Length: 347
Length: 262
Image (tube, rainbow over all chains, first blue to last red; front, side):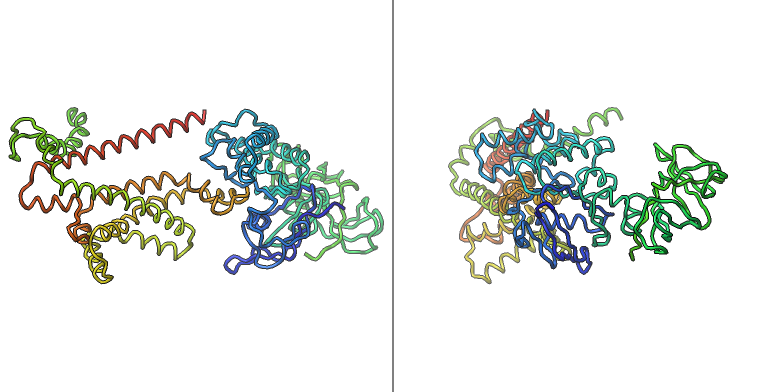
């Protein structure tokens, strides 16, 4: 495995008696794109601010390359931050904003000019040196904020919901661009967001958080396919999760019938959870379905319709480009490949 | 109605400026009478520049105003930053403590100062006058700077630290430039309050040290000498020039900003 750069050991944080972080343990590796994902108030921003040195933990240790840096002030840490509202210096132009950190490290003017130009090229803002901050669009300010941070060649870049203020289209573009920047610089990114799609698109590793605790750490594909508990499953993809029983290899029982599946290795009669993604449930005529049900709700989502289908005491979430009206009887087909059997975990 | 519509603003300004205009005109009046025009003269200005006592008090007024407003601006800015960093009850308590002297009647402040000076055995004169002016100017600076601090993006300070600035450097290179308009406004407010003051000065000075307002007050008891019109005209023109200078500065600054934004 890659080389560790940051480690949080039993980090806890209290604000006025409220436990914001509940003994977090987290290991972050060099060149990794890590996303802290969770709803607001889950402690993800506090975690980032502790790594940046803007908050100090109530207890626990923060290690940087194996050394404890709890007491190292933020201006001495080899991390830089892209703040949520960019926090650009309004009295300085684009060039001077980016040069701010370089001037502190006492580089000469020639070096500063070269590095600023490189940073502007990296974020596609060449020729904007003399512009005032207020004359830039949100997306451009965002790019300046990134350039201002990366120009200092930090080991780790912290990003606090940097795309939250951008419109959808721009956000998608910046997601790809940020990922490219990370690859090109070859440094660690720690990215905070509440947008699961953003997390799935960009990350090498996702850390799902809730109520100051880490719920699951894993690669996007694992988090999506094998959510560890109800909260993660719900937050990540709104899949249908059902209690089931493993019959034997390639056979699983749930929703009152046996299904063929591709999973093996569970014990016969073992209690399991079965995850079915809404896009994997196919609606057919009632007589052709493995399961029958009644449509109880339809919501148009742009590319697809999100429908709830009631079958017995189970409510299935179904995504389809074809709409079935509320009240209609439908059949449902689930292919073996789309059934994800996971170990039952006490959540 | 049409006439009122057109002249309303004109009337307001007439009422505001007529007294000052009359003061200026009468400073050139050859007749010593306060009611009748007796022809143009520069005599009062000539007399004024021979009146050492009056010139000294004008000098005192200006020196005190400059020194007091500079010291009050320095102390007030630091105090405002301190209050800004406070939280909860302490903060609102400090803010109220700042407002109180502003609302307090001058005469109460003045007598309190006098009693304090006597109690502390501080001789009344130039120094006590200066101390009093610095003190009553202080709240005006604080209330000018605080709103500017509140408008700041709190992350800007963090951003400066993040980029390697020490807290001291962060304040000087990031916070200070952004609250500068508030500091400048506070300085001007302090300056004019100091020039303006009579009541507090009257009770805190001594040893024959007097500022312009005290001198005029004592002269007025013997009848207003047109010299006073002359000195006040000079003061008014001085303030007017200062205002023009500031306006021009502000204008060039904002147009510079706009050019930078193109």
